[in-house]
Image (tube, rainbow, N blue to C red; front, side, top):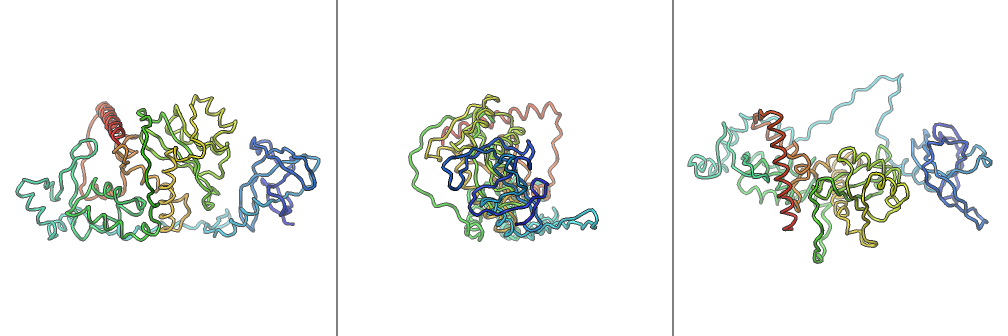
Length: 458
């Protein structure tokens, strides 16, 4: 028998290897600790089952740190001042012990230690040291760019000189003309690393080419990109799931209104993060393919609703939600939550979860998290923002636009964009608020029309 803090109260802990769930007396918990869930338990040598309420429990001990679990609440008449520790919580404690604690605790009596910022990655740091003048000099001295300079001087090709820099004319998804910066040979490897690794999350060949060609170009850049991705060690070690034979596709309704329908699901368990989260509640907005993923400690109804409220606070309440038949989504609490906010619920076919497109998103999400965790050594929750940034800012095959472009009306500023601006020094457009609003409305309408047209073709 040992002692530990149970919801900030010191109690004696008794380990019961025959119990699957913890037991605690009603005297030891507060009303707000009750989760609203119940569990049926059966005692040895007793044929009858007993229904007990569940409570959220926080364990704290200098031996294993802190864990969050649940316990069945017994009547006050059985209170003997002992907390019964079951197998589930014991497993959490064992996993917590195996996880190295890298964060030093600073108390009021100790001197604060300054937190050193991590050093910039070698390739990125080298690129930032190249200013516009040095970049222009590298362009002029690169022998591989001589044909491009000749075509620029003849004025017959797509190459133009803007200031001292050589660029290439191009059109984006909106039909607007833009300039791709022509990269000299000695900087191409670093540019490829920027567009494929780090916050680009080691996506495949197609998405890496799309990210590169938005702002950069050089002769044979497509072939170089393919070779770089196929020789990337983390990408090849994790790999992509083996493609299976595809069944004939059936037409599904195309959602044209932004945020009107979302598909949700839960994925996990992952290794426990520093914030004691093991699962992700995932969501895909069907019209824009915009992904969301919220870390949660468990996937009970309360946690699911809290995570959904976090999503809805940014995007508003949808008209329709599609989910599977998991108890977290079909419980009375979740059903009433959807009904109160006027949300129509559609459940995926039983024994056929593939009918929910978010399942495909799970495969990509887990692969990218695995690659980033392999590189950084951090837990999955710390690598989640970089993964979502990569997925939101790359072109989606079905719409022809990045999810961020359909939601915000423009592409987000990513590291490769910041580097492009560092060399080109573009001037900010001076337009009134009214002009910007009308321009944004027209751009969003055109994006929506093109996306619907693309999805119809696909």
